[in-house]
Amino acid sequence: METAINPLLISSAVAYLLAGILFLLHKTRAAGVVAGLAWLVNLVVIVLNGLIVNDIPLGNMYQVQAVLSLCFLPLFVLFSLRDKLNWTGVYFAFASALPMIGAIFMDKQATWKRMPALQSNWFVPHVLAYMISYALCAVAFIMLIRLWIRKSDPAELRRAIYQILRTAFPFMTFGMLSGALWAEEAWGQYWSWDAKEVWSLITWGLYLIYFHCRKSSWARNADWAHLLAFLALLATFFLVNLLPKLGSLLHSYA
Amino acid sequence: MKFSIVIFCAVILLLLAGVLPVGKGLEATAVYYSPAMILLLGLLSISLVWCCVKRKFSAKQIGFYLVHLGVVVILSGAMVGYIAGKKGMVQLQLFRPVAASGLMGEEPVPFGFEVAAKDFEVEFYPPVYHLYHQLLPEQVTSGQMPFEKAAEYDTAGKDFIEIDGIGRLAVSNLWNEAAGEWTPRRRLEAGSFLHRASQIPSHYVVTLQIVDGEQHVELPISINHPAGYKGWRFYLMSYDQVNRSYVVLSARSDPGRNAVIAGIWIVIIGTFILCFRRQAGSLRHVSQASSLPLENGGKLGNGGVS
Image (tube, rainbow over all chains, first blue to last red):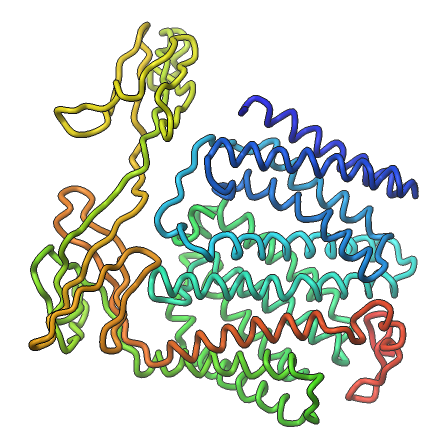
């Protein structure tokens, strides 16, 4: 099973990229089909990961990134149906490819045993809520970059960014606060000022500043708040795990 | 609105001061419990209440009220816990009752009753074995061990493991009946060997015995399943991994706990209501909202004020 993983990861990443290119070329139907295939391969990877570890495959960065990739397409379908944001397919497709590409190069530890602290009903909702919010924040950030590079139709892009972040934020809030409830159950402390916790609070606070700026006379600074919020999100997701000096004791497995 | 944004920015700067590894780094808790942080959170609470008070009440604004007041409830509960809460760590030797928390020089905090640990149990996951192959002398670089890891095998739910290039090995052969443990190292042919990885506990549980005057109460606790008695809550943190002679508990008495938990749920529910309700944020409606006047007399348009 392990040997099938890398070819599947590569196939899925390539198909997501191809879907993005097709969306760019306005071949929407073909792009949808290719993105759907990429998503199915992505799903197979997650099922295989689950079979290999004999548990929910959220045990390391590689497994989490595969789940993160899987979140984008259903969210795109949601935004297309609910908000008529069909034209955002290109951003969702390229954003789906990024975690997959990262996963290809990551250490694929075959075994994972859930330590007692992780054996909680909060584990899956906490991680999934964060994955959904991170997926949406990544799409919104790519749209922000697009906005800054090409100033065409900024109003529509800004409105789409706002709509996407508005959906991301409750999931981020649930992710952070469910973590606090879980920590209280496990260690008797909602908040331990662990590096990952503090960075997640900084990220949440910066998105909050984005929303408040947008409603205030400082609306022009909202884009900067959005940029800083996404950089903080990257610090929360990657740097805390990768840089020992920022090390997180309580989230060493996250 | 601007006042709230300034407060958010100040709080974030203080959080960064505690978490960024600049120089030797600041003592994180000194930052997070500093008078400046407490003052900022106090100002934030006042501004949140003020935002709700000055808004004309409407049932459609329920999400707004829940989010803003929920944060105030959390901060109030946390402040009550900070002022009136008691906490400590306890290293409980099995069957030796203690009447107070206090570990490693902590000031002892009396419980008002005695606590003893009994019936401690720990279960482990089936072991994972790593396969190592011996390296040829010319393959060994300076400082490197003369073998390298080739594969790993999880024995969970398996009767046999299929070892690359060697063949099948019955999992039962790895159990050392005399020692009562899984074999730490098993030699194979051609210098290869299996090495048992550190065993990971799957579950551990201890039964606490509370002696409160004439009353005797037994409370089983495990990780994620604390137990409470007379305002105190006991959390199982770790155990003596060598001799299994003691367990480490965290003991807390926090009168603000219920308020914090209630506040957390209020904020979660409020955020979902606020962000998912159909209003100006929905794209089909934003075009109308983009020309709505702002509180300061400006107009929102293209993410800016016109």
